[in-house]
Length: 118
Image (cartoon, rainbow, N blue to C red; front, side, top):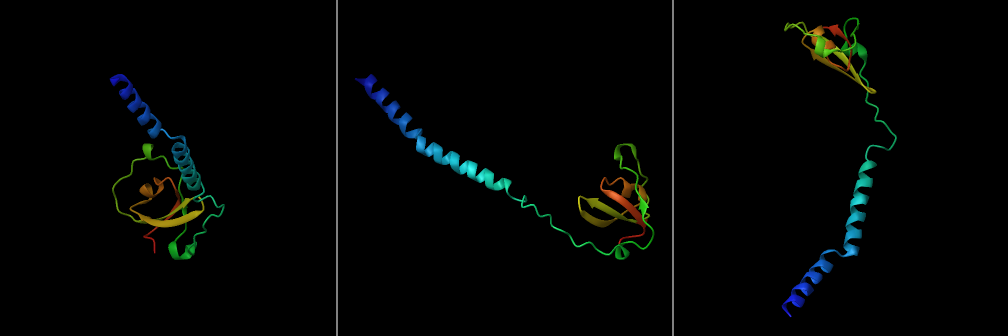
């Protein structure tokens, strides 16, 4: 008699914890959540940043940077500020670097001009 009761309890617990409808509902919610996350940022439209007038950023001629190779390029620590033009995809930005060597060690650097960015 005891053996029948313990088997009966196990089968009741087993049936209640694995209801197929609950499993299907959980799976459907998980898949719906994942599919909506893949739609974020894929509308096909790329935001177009307002590109500042280059004359406001650079006061001198732009010196082109060679391809960046930071592992093989060691820069001295001297302060001769330059304004670096960087490009990531379609976004162009400007920032001040401590010198031309450190400016061209930035992988996104296109070129630089002497002096701080305005």
